[in-house]
Length: 216
Image (cartoon, rainbow, N blue to C red; front, side, top):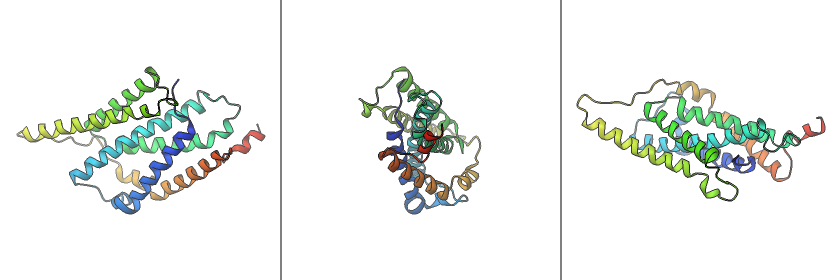
């Protein structure tokens, strides 16, 4: 069974959350406002790549959490030292996947999601990448997914220009405004603080819930 341990997953989570929060305050101000949406094709393209990265990290966070909490890859004798990081990774993973794919999906985004999920399952479950020895291989499925997104976007744009009656990759539904109101900058700031505290405690051999081991 291949998986990324929760320590490395926490590092990836903090890095991604730091980039996300910097976007809220500096380079993506519309993200703070549920009523404002992006229209520029270049921004939308970069946003799509960012969503692919976020969704892939969401796969990693969910995979790590589920395998530790429910499949017992570390055993359950010391679960109190892993439960906090796994819960935080679980919450962040769910937020990233929902935000990247299911808030305002189109056929193009759903297709990219399916391709990326298939690649992830192949590399992590079928091909059994040994992540501790081959860390450079962890993100290979993500780069394939980004390449697929670029190709399918180019095909879509060419088809749309050649189509006389016009062709739009319409959203299947959209609850972006509701999503932004729940998973706003305050929520992500709190999550970032908890992730930062937990990784510091993990380095020192502790956890926010390490005291549970003395109860059970």
